[in-house]
Length: 242
Image (cartoon, rainbow, N blue to C red):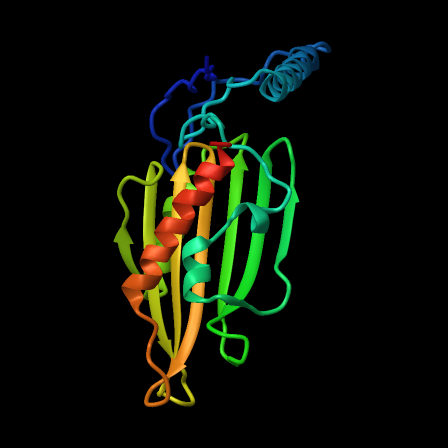
């Protein structure tokens, strides 16, 4: 249940330069005139303190504009997101691993955070590699919807091509960017990223790679997109323990 403080009484507009008429004559003299003011201040402070304690101790007493925090559902925190994320489709496209995967998981009453990064190559002798970054967060105190939509708006402003994805969480989309080098226009730096929001969960999987015109074939955009979707569906199922 949410509670709202009563709205202040509307006394009408206040116009600069116009003053409320004052009664004629000086105010009545009294040596106790400060006490009502003092008690009023103390009462306001006491009310504020009680309200602050209530907000901190009573769940759901304040409903934020974006709504109450959604239920976590069956999602869980895993210690190693790199191990949980099999990435079967991407490892078919890039069978060789470059370096050691990096991961972390943190837990907090307000937010659980899981992260993983991997670098993959088509073969051990390749010098070029593709980067994979993924993150899954469980929002335990606030509804992440507003920030999720703001992220999508930010990608559009950065010239990403956005395509909506159906049947994946409550909201999902893929962003694509082909960014040419400013010093050598034959070089292309590509990024595709999938963002998902499902209740209290927000998640992304990002792929990035590069190629040079005339020297290499550009990675197939749709093939990478399908890998993002397939591997993400598998990971989200794994995070529910299914």
